[in-house]
Image (cartoon, rainbow, N blue to C red; front, side):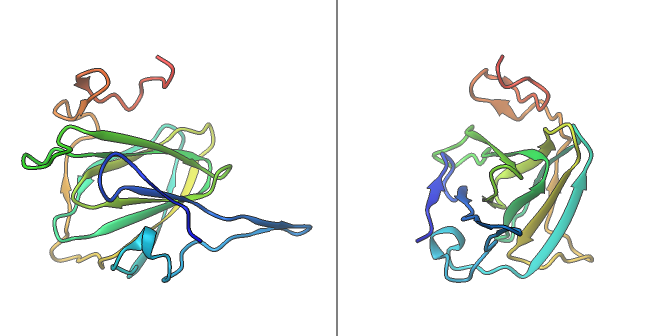
Length: 170
């Protein structure tokens, strides 16, 4: 049974992977087609690998053609954020943060219509595999971008511009 956690933004979900340890290390299933509670009706068509040095921010972007991204941090730790600025959305202005790491393997699902991005928060680089439900189109990319420090993305906790570098305890 897949234990999927829904976040405050509809469609943003996390799933803690089941780790099966033995004397050699561990085994875990990363994704299965029968995990409908996590995946919905769309299946993965592309897998990508991202290596980011400590404190590197890769944000903000979104997709307009129905893409969903699934992040799995294999090494290090990463803050994964999603922000809803759609004018007609009941969750307009909501922002979620998920900390994913090698210490707590999980899949983080982000529907592409939300602005989303990542920051490596570990002292060592992060290694992430992310899966997408649509193929990247080199001639007509499905990406809209904003700078990582875009002042129009508002942190609902402070009503100020979202600060990727703000310590979590302040």
